Picture 1 (cartoon, helix red, strand yellow):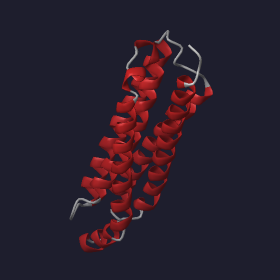
Picture 2 (cartoon, one colour):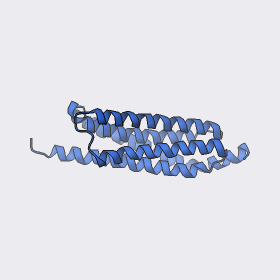
Picture 3 (cartoon, one colour):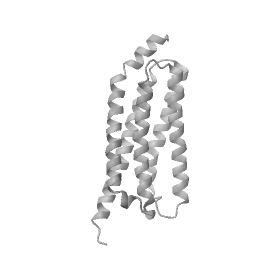
Picture 4 (cartoon, one colour):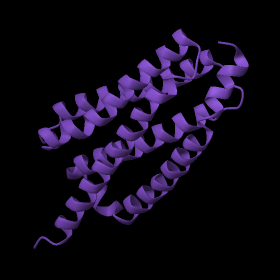
Length: 179
């Protein structure tokens, strides 16, 4: 595929990635405000699980913002998109690995079974698919992999919403418990 056809294919996704980037930036700001308001309860040493969840939601939204900005780079070729998206996926997978190691070693009870595995899995799945998208860009040299990247966008959004909602519910329940 020639460069102009590739660029036309990527440009056809412009509005979608503008919306994704805008939404993720707005949600990132809201999450930051929410965490800042509850900073005293999240910063407590015994609440490493809340910090991990806030970090996970923050990471998912930050990855979305990065993916959007990468796709919106003007006149990017398939190779540069592939390398950039692979770097985002690689950072995500390393962070997930570090979280899992930290949780399994922790004695604070933050490794809470299925819910924790589900929350971490959202990001791991999205990162693996993003690696596939990056490899597809490198191999195909066309814009078709952006169709697969929509899966990454929705998985990261769902993952961030799942984590943020769980954080909100748990923090709300804790605030109403008798002390």
